[in-house]
Each structure stands twice: as C-alpha cells, then as structure tokens.
Image (cartoon, rainbow over all chains, first blue to last red; front, side):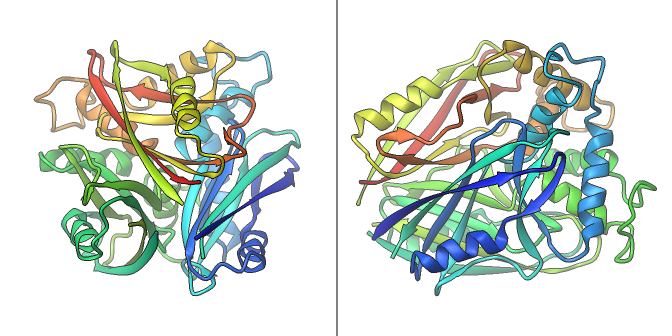
Length: 139
Length: 139
Length: 139
C-alpha cells in the first residue's frame, strides 16, 4: 500500500464551473494505482468541488442561475460585506455544496458514472487562483 | 492493509429515500474488516447519498416536502428541460446534498450514530436503476 | 501503513458554530502521522461538520442568519414536530451540509487552506453533547 500527493492549481475567470475530470484521471494513471481511494480537497472557503453532469452545458447554466437566485449577492441580511457583494454569498454557496470529495479507483480507473464530471465551482465574480489537494492511497 | 470493492444496485420507485444501512453493514461484516475506512460513491447526477434519522418516517416525509418546495420541478428559470420537469430540479437537489460518503469501521462495526441511517435519495419522479460503488480499506 | 481512531466529544451551547481545528491538528501530531488521510464523522442527524472561514466572525453570523431564514423553525410544512420547532429544521440543515469530511495529511500537517477552519455546527437551539469520530490512515 502506498500514497501519492498532488496539487492542481486552477486560474478561474470568475463565477462558473471548470471541469477537472481529465486532469484528475491523468494523475491517477501517472501514479500507476490499480486500486485505491482518491480524495480531493479544495483549500478555499468561497469555491466548491462538485460532481455533476458533463453532457449538456445547460445543466451548469441552470445550476448557476438557481444558486444565484437562492443565495442573492448583496443580500441585505449580510453583515460581512467588506470584501464585496459576492463574498458572503460565495461562503454560503460553499457551505451548501462541498470542498472535499472521495472516489474509489478500481482496475486502474476512477470510479465515475457515465455522465459524472468533477468540477471546480468558482463562486466569486472576479478571477481567482484556486488550489486543489489530491491524495491517493492504494496499490 | 487490504482493500475490497463492491457494487450495490438499487431499483428505485421514483422520488424518495431508500435505506441501505443493513446492506452496507453486511458487506463490512462479510469482508471481515476489523478497522478501516468505508467510502460509498453514487454514480449518478440526479440522486444522492444521505445520512439521516432512521427512526420516525415523518422526517423523510418532511425532507422530501421541503426540498420539493425549495427546488420546484418545472421552475421557469430552467433551460435544461428536454428530459422532463423533474430533471433539472434533480440535478440541483444532488448538488445541494452529496454523492460520496466516508465512514470509519472500528472493532468490526460501521461507526454510525444511534439514529443514523444511510439512504439513497432518488430525485427523479420515475423509477431508475442506481449504482453505488463501495470501497473499504483497512485490516 | 497504520490506522488510528479517536473520538471528540463536544458540549454545545445551542445553535452555532464551534471550531475544532486545533483539537483535530493536535490528534494528527500526537499520532505521529507524516502522510495520510484524515476522516471526521459526526454521529448525529441534527448537527453538521463544516469547513469555513476562520478569520472574520461575521461570516459565521451571516451563515447562521441565512440558514435560519432559508430553513425556518416551525415551518407549517413540517409534520415531524414532536421534538420542537427547531428539530425538523435541524435535520434539513444537516442534509444541506455534511456529516463527514476527509482531508489529506502531508508532511506532518493537515492540508487546510489559510482561511479554512473545521467547525461543528449545532443546529438545535438547546445544548447537546455531540460525538465526532476521527480516523487516520497513513504512516
């Protein structure tokens, strides 16, 4: 049994979903793991990791529209406003989703459904540099 | 240290929660793991894995009613409507909950609270066949 | 490769966020793990584990205010009301967040972002005793 660590750095262009599936798969293959457990952890509090449909881009558009309506930027309820209208809404969107994900690796492949893609979801409106830590344990 | 893989296939009857706790516990016992980490991953984007109260069935009824009101089927906001009124709402319900869960196994038992059950939450209104991948690492 | 198990017991004072970061870090250091995977699991269905900003306390205040408005106590939709106005809302808040978290441990340190803290989020209005199971696998 052995472990591997990697870091993926993503330059976001502001709010939106960026697919990481191919990059993550490449790291699993390069590490020559046949069987194991992959964990991804995003080191931020205003962006998320999400597994969602990677076929129709309208799914991502609707996700974005729904979350924007459910968690409005500049909500008068917010006291934490010094970093902009989109800062507190970004923290809440993060709390409602996830910053860590674990997936099995079996027979050399990441166990994902046919339509599942791994996404970084940037919740801030301005571009940010985001770091995802990747850990694999297995053999 | 060793690993085990399983797949649980569940035929859902449409929207609702289906308990998997006993089935998961049986796999842990059959694998003869004394100590380890169990990970469940659901290979779909319109259903979830949820840990919730397994005592009063009214909790599940209220969860369902609350999510149905918070994420309305056929919301006019949605553009992705080709697969039915309940498709985009199902994706959003999935984003708001989880598709992967990790739980310790200690002294031969899954570490769960007294009232915690593991559920598959079907978000589509029609029956579906759902696959849950199960991974255990330990000894 | 080896494993360690711990349990953290937290006496909450009612609804609110309690930081666990230092306590979790101490357990990782005491266990002398250089590299591995840490998993936390909360054994309850009306409280959550959350990774959020640990700098400005107003972030926690706004999270609390937003969730209280989004999931109102005593919502007339609820049928499960025997345990009080805040019971069903607590279950829903738990379903919308998480009860388990996995984080890599690398070079003897828990991999967290600069602003990330680990919190127990009590959703009930009265004080409760909460148990968090901690598992580490690594070397």
